[in-house]
Image 1: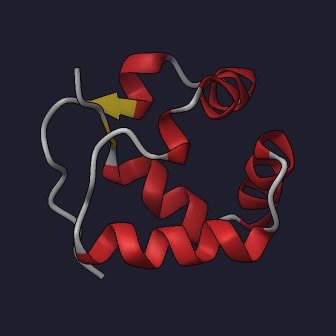
Image 2 (image 1 turned 90 degrees about the vertical axis):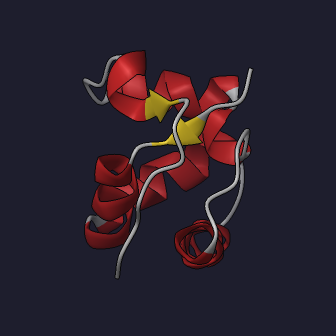
Length: 80
């Protein structure tokens, strides 16, 4: 199955530095990698990314999101 990240999560990651840094820490990468990912993802959403990995989903869950609030099987319509 292919999964995409919902636009609400993408927007929160763009706007909330603390949220973005927490995700970067959970994935073992730097904040800039998340920023670059978001830029690329907004241009052309692609399925099964780093943000759909188990570590990312666990982070979102710890932040109060259910899996269905994070993932979708439909390509999200993202605008800047």
